[in-house]
Image (cartoon, rainbow, N blue to C red):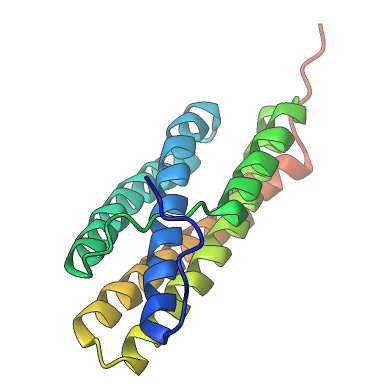
Length: 174
């Protein structure tokens, strides 16, 4: 069970808190990605989302190892930001009636989530570097780089496929 109101008195405590929030957020995202892959109509979007799901699983494993090494495995604090971003995505997707618009919506929401994760992993890497925890800093930095690569793929997909199709969806009338 996650610890409640654990005092944060050092940068190390803050790093452990960040890692606890990261793993909670990654687990939430992992569950949602499985559903979002099913909802995507673009094969290329499905492929990027599948890769993102795999990376998210790797991030969870790395975070579990970090927390185990830190003897902080019980620190898994609710990530309310990720929860809110996922809820917002689900709500918006439920309002989209056209598959091309739904793909554009999903992609935009995923980039918002992705940018949040880039920032959070970057912060964790900076904390670990400040604490001379080089191994841990490299794990957080690698996750940040992974997130940036996914962001680049999502941006390319948005620019060259998803948004042009959403701009002029094919309307079928009977």
